[in-house]
Image 1 (cartoon, rainbow, N blue to C red):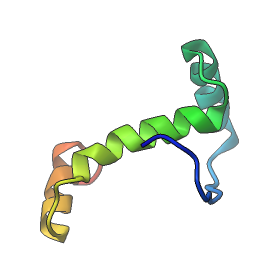
Image 2 (image 1 turned 60 degrees about the vertical axis):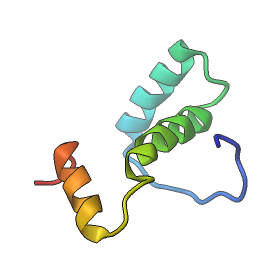
Image 3 (image 1 turned 45 degrees about the vertical axis):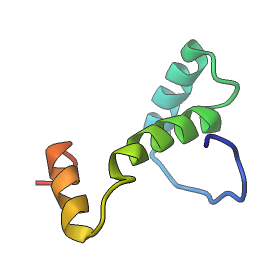
Length: 67
């Protein structure tokens, strides 16, 4: 589930990257990328059982990602 296969680059703000890198280091992750992969995999679990766009929107609203 958390393995690296083919990858893509995602651009984020440098300050955010620095904050993520600090947390990843404290948490014992080998790399910042490994930590980000883990966090994204965990968050995506919220959407694994969604059947349609309406369900996705409802979950995003429930999690506070959209209003």
